[in-house]
Amino acid sequence: MTASVCVTAPAKINLHLEVLGLRADGFHELAMVMQSIDLKDELRCENTADGTLSLTCDEPDLSCGDDNLILRAARLLRERSGFSELGARMHLSKRIPIGAGLAGGSSDGAAALVALNELWGLGLVESQVERLAAELGSDMPFCVAGGTQLCFGRGERLEPLPPVKAELGLLLVKDPEVSVSTPWAYGEYRRQRGHQYLQDEASFERRRQDLRSARWLYPLGQDIPPLRNDLQTVVAPLTPSVRNALECLRPQQGCLQVAMSGSGPSSFGLFLDRSGADRAKEAVEAQLDGLGLRSWSCSLIPHGVKLMS
Ligand code: C5P
Image (tube, rainbow, N blue to C red):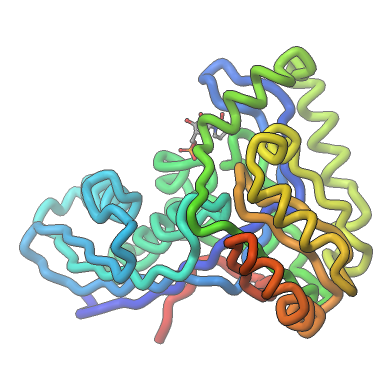
């Protein structure tokens, strides 16, 4: 067993989020392209070997109680290991905005699985870690290996794609005071668009196949990604900060496309490279400040949770 392990947990954006239909288990059947970005939390875990699991965080707004995905992941991993005496003291340095549609909580949970697997010497391989992650949240399996992946099912059926080729920069915008509940966003989508849902597996599979063969994915960065987020069509009209963010980003020099990420409310503009995103951040910052919006200039990265040496 190791004394301590530190991992980074990157945020993700959705380059494509298509709601196909409703499943028998109440979740939505999705066709997505998820992409890791270099906005990261950091999780440090120390061995206690006394059967206690504890979590602290430098962000006072985040609950470190039993509902936190890090503690839920730790408990699940310990239970499945069969070693009830395993323990860890964990500390999270939070950089990813909370309730933003960036999978910050999911990535932290995935980070706990990866870090504790290492700390406790359990020897689980990536696919086993992803299976445990799927028990805790729909976005969590993606966060383990990250990079660029097709995500089907409720998000847990992963098909890795070639890594992003060109640099592509990203300007991410969010109102720190606003968060969107994922169940609410899906519920609203169902209420407004449920009558358009596809009904059978053959129709789902046709849409998956369309996405698998989309030219802009091979490799990402060669063509301009068209960006699609079905949840944006119901969240944006009801969330002024999303509309403001998209309106500020769209006219920026070099901005290729704009979209909301996940169930929102974070939104982003895509740029040809990181310096384009940096320049846009400088140009638009005062306007965003005036609207109470914060921004982050980011790059796309080819990996998810990573052990730090
Ligand atoms: O899996 P996760 O905890 O992230 O899901 C949160 C909620 O979002 C679910 O309880 C469900 O209401 C909604 N959801 C959905 N279909 C998905 C993923 C999430 O309806 N594929």
